[in-house]
Each structure stands twice: as structure tokens, then as C-alpha cells.
Length: 407
Image 1 (cartoon, rainbow, N blue to C red):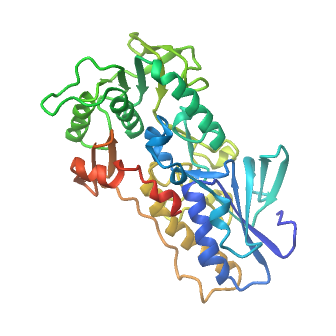
Image 2 (cartoon, rainbow, N blue to C red; image 1 turned 90 degrees about the vertical axis):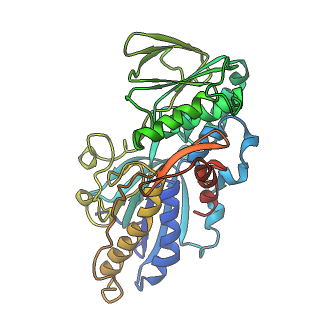
Image 3 (tube, rainbow, N blue to C red; image 1 turned 135 degrees about the vertical axis):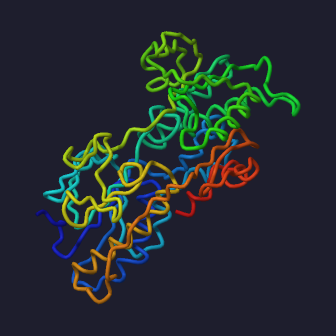
């Protein structure tokens, strides 16, 4: 098996520069590498297509206008937050992983400067996440592409009279809510619906209800909040196609015809596909993937059992839990504890290693918070329904911008 170029150097490679990857890198540098009494020099290599980590949950508001959120909290430079560690213990490699050879234990990277580099690893963590269908709602390339996409959308937004948002999950509802309030304002406190909105915003959900992770009564409350900002919800009939097909994906500012599965057509000056995500796993062998494209990950230990020793996955690219920010934050300490145990055992630290693996347990209680505009929201936490004020206080104020700087 291939090893690092230097016989005394062992690379712990983390692929992905978002929540899971950056958090894992910090933990390993602070708490693990220093505990390894070994003849080898361990180095954390973080591979990231972007130079900045960004708060993806904030995209529904951030895509409208820079002034709505502080940009220095929305985007945080990755290299700057690792300057605190000893020289030689960390490397940021800008680029995109294009091949992960778990047998030879190497990862091939197309670097940002146009070259291809192969990095050997002693341990590896795949934390590449998942990309959205709409480039408005997260990194599909890097921070520059995201900003360019927002600029194109913002140029078209003042001229739009109809916007269609496809999807019934939190991202779709939050995006429609932010656009509805920004463009239309709110109905007065005695009205259940905003009459004659300036811009017709329509949410199209293929499911029988919106927000499928939340109970029916909460979903109905969300619909009532949307109605008061001029947002119409159509349920039970998904989008079948758009014309042109590139609308909302390759071209975020293109007017289009939206055709539903029942044959009904809607015209949209702007179209945002906000349904589901696509795991960033194309560089991984299909033998390691589930049918939905996520990596087969041990749901307790977060190891990729079929890939060999000291190979792990975390975040939306992994199969251990449904995609959700709180599942990533809960998984980081479990993953890092098991990495530490594996490294200690493999480097003669049996006495220092934990006697058993730490196990991840998915909290299946109803937990989800969905802001609807700047002052309303619906949700539940640990099975308890939350009042609108608490959803605003916890998430709706700034969409968890504090998490990015604290990674």
C-alpha cells in the first residue's frame, strides 16, 4: 500500500472543507496528534475546493442581498483559522478530489492551480457533503461561483413578477419565505392572507404536505405564515420539467415554463429547484456507495468498514443519518474519538486508547426549525413543538451564522 512521500510522515487526509471536515481537522490537531508518541510525524491535510467555509443554512436569506447578513460571518477564510497550529502539522490543499483509491490509500486531486496531485494517506475522512440542484443554495463549485450566481439572480430579481420554488422541505420553505417577505412585506395582523402581492411566489411540493419531518399541524402553521407574505403552496404534484431545461440550474436568472406531473404549466420569471441534494461522492468507488449515492458508513462508529482501516465518513455524504446540521455536530466528537482510538492502537498507545469504540446514536425525535421570513418560524426540538418566537430566536435571527466562525 502506498504511504506518504516522506518515510517519517503520515498524512491524515480530510476531504471536504465544510462543517464536518473543518471541525474534524481542528479536533485532530488540538486533541489527537499531540497524544501520539510515535517515530512518525503526523500531518492533517485538508482538501477543499473553496478557500472559504460558508454558512450554508443561511443561503435562503443571503442570496437576496449582502446587507441582510454580515459577510464576515457568512464566509470565513479556512487558512486563517488554522494558523494557530504548529508549522508543518496542517496543510490546506485547494482542489477537488477526483479519485479515491481505498486499496492503494491515495486520493487524486485536481488542484485550484490547474495541476493534478496524488496524496497518499495513513488515515482519511470523507466529508465532501452534498450539493444542491440550485447553485444559489450552496457551493456547487467554490465561493467565487456562488457569489457570481447570487449576482446574476439579484440582477433579475427586481424585474420578476412570478417566482416558482420547487420543493417542500426546509430549504424550499425558507427560500420562499425570505423572498415573499422581502418582495411583498406582510399582511396586517387581522388578515390571514396577503391580497394582491407584488410578486407571486409559488411553492410546488410533490408530497401531500410540506415539511415532511414535522407533524401536520406544524406544516399547516407554516402554510398560514407563507400565505401572509404572498406565497402560494401547491402540494401533491411535483415538477416534471422546465423549458428551458437549464433554468434554475445552469441559468438562475432565466424565465421558464414549469410543467407539473399533472400536465399543468406555470410561467416563472425565476425558478429555484430547492428539493433534495446530490451526494458529492462521484470520486469514490461504487463498491463503497449506497443506492442513493451516499457512502456506506457504519452508523455507530462512522467508519467505512468496506474501505479498510482508518477510513471514515461524516456529514451529508455519509449514510449514518439523514442530512441535517445537528446530526453533523453530534457526530464530530464520536468520529474523532474513534479516530483517536484507532491511531493510538496502531501506534503502540494501547494503554492510552479508549477500551471501546464510542458509538453514535441518531436522535429520532422530531427536531427541525424553519424560519419563515425575518420574524416568524415553525419547528420542534426533541419532540416538543416550538413557538414561533423561539424559532426566530434560535435560528431565524441569523441562520446560525455563529457556527461558521466557531468551527
